[in-house]
Length: 105
Length: 144
Length: 96
Image: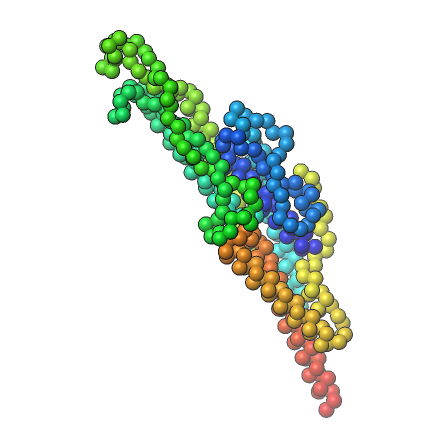
């Protein structure tokens, strides 16, 4: 269902925005890493995703818990998944366009 | 949810890390400066980072964006107010009556490590902007 | 990270199926529902473009998909109409 792919891309965008935020604030005192619960948001299929603090990340001296390793990994992963979903969606669109044009004869 | 505001976030990160790096470079360059126009030895400076809410430059409405995402800004520059380090150097032109010279409290090793941290932070923000830009590009390709 | 959930066979626009899938039912009904789909898709697309332009946090890909759906709904409607018109013309020729 293309709706699922679009929802997937919506969530990846939201997630990537939080990754960007975490990276920008990697040295901000007291800042806590933010993320969305991808699986449950995807099951929901509707509504704006909720951001929440991530559990299990240790605090540094200044109260900041951003792990550049984690954010870099997510940055790459989100980008690749987005690209994959976009390619799948693109091919679905192409197929439908062909199907419509087929009817021209 | 808009990726465009993620670009603003990334660029705010770059600007903040660059400002931080510039202050660290100034500290390192002045680690031994005993005389300044304001009088007294150089006093080291630190950048204080703070999260800042973000909206894209085209945005008319803040509230719709994912609220937890935020950029960063150098909220203030803090100048060291501690007493300067005194070293006994009687022949020094800036020595006081007792032969002591006031030196800045700069730890070059520490600031070098911080400078590397600022450089890494800068690069990480550059990478974030690159990845977001690619995603926007792929969205556009859906039209082709 | 959990695996991507499986995605079933593509069906980009549900209204398109409804409008184009009937094999010879009531033509006027087919037309009405096709026109409604096109109008609906158009409204959604315009709204999405508006939100994108005013910077209200609309994702670019959502806007692109909305405008693509509108475009395809219209294309399908055009093809359907052409089919109907040529079928009608053929029938008219037969009666002469």
